[in-house]
Length: 244
Length: 247
Ligand SMILES: Nc1ncnc2c1ncn2[C@@H]1O[C@H](COP(=O)(O)OP(=O)(O)OP(=O)(O)O)[C@@H](O)[C@H]1O
Ligand SMILES: [Mg+2]
Image 1 (cartoon, chains in turn blue, brown):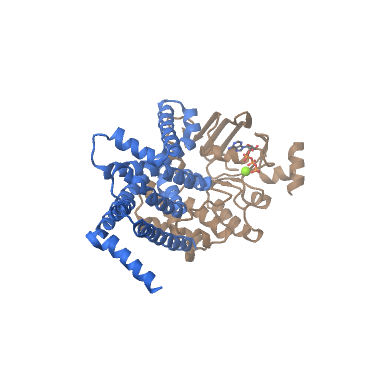
Image 2: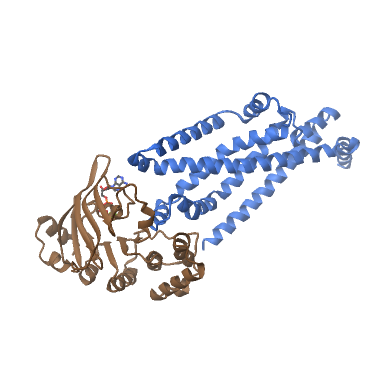
């Protein structure tokens, strides 16, 4: 038993302490968190816009049809583009999207981190949009009618009545999406970014021992995910509390 | 009847179809200032649809609605402005669950009339006082009983100082013991001179405060008149058989 521990300790110092290789892990973790954070922001922004357009189309298409005019065609076109975005993004693997972004669309850029933020953000936006839209759909239409009957415009009703309730409903699901995104960024190594996963893999390549670096990387992901899951639980409890 | 007072809403040959289903088949009616119009009729006869076209929650497919001299079915009209003057109370209350009673009431005046918060809250508190709910101002809708919710919904609409109040079966979702408290508020409102259009099955309420009762069936007004007369001397067979079921 003692021997096993000593062996583990040796493995640890060999993999992480020698040559300051722990710094790679720290650096990789920083990169992973950075990409995730900004991709989340971009994903929410895109998600809000797309969900808003799709819900607006669903709610107002009949009225606009009755009214005629260019508004209907414009909204129809934007709605169609949103649908294309959702279909393409959700119908292809994120790694492929990342590769296309890096090697085709932004082939001239050598800022891998920025490209990764864009790729993961655009990818996440499609899922977040559907989460938001589901949230809006789940709100009783009576809420909408109450707002409109008071004289609030469509936008005001959305802003003061629907969206605040929607956020409350989707917050746990949204946080879950961030956990998914955090783990998905682990493919960033495909375009030469040294994220957490890549850092572990580089150490493995240098030390020719797989166990220690890969398990360490896995444990770090696990710790972050567990922390987030715990936060979501607390949040859910808090939200449920404020209803009563 | 208050037929000598000015016309507030003039409904002319109003029609509404959902696809192939024609729900309103030409409703014509003048509602005068101070009128309390009660709409009765069997399920599916188009009562809710009629009420909801009055503030254009449902878009009419034919005819016109003139409110305060403006044809609001004209699509160049900004309906939001006119809705501010038409309060609506729903069967399911539709209070905003994420806002307190007070915030439910002050939202529209603050955002639409730009009333300062303090002024809006003062009016809201006065109204809550009137319906006996001043102590619930800081409560959330989920903490209220059905009867309390509906009373809040009524005063929320009153905060906009509307010229007419529309009610769609305001007591139908309530436990029987709470119907009275809501009807009392509505009766007081009627006596204060508010113009009201009420879809209801509460014949007692109709008898007591309504100036005019409409019997709607299959999308047309089959009979109308003072409630007492309508209920005691129905002319048509359809109204007779309807009354036999509800009275
Ligand atoms: N949005 C809609 N789409 C399609 N059909 C509708 C819609 N709203 C109402 N209808 C139909 O129109 C008819 C009249 O409905 P309405 O709700 O006006 O009746 P009502 O007299 O209020 O009935 P109740 O007493 O049950 O409330 C019904 O057949 C109903 O199914
Ligand atoms: Mg109805």
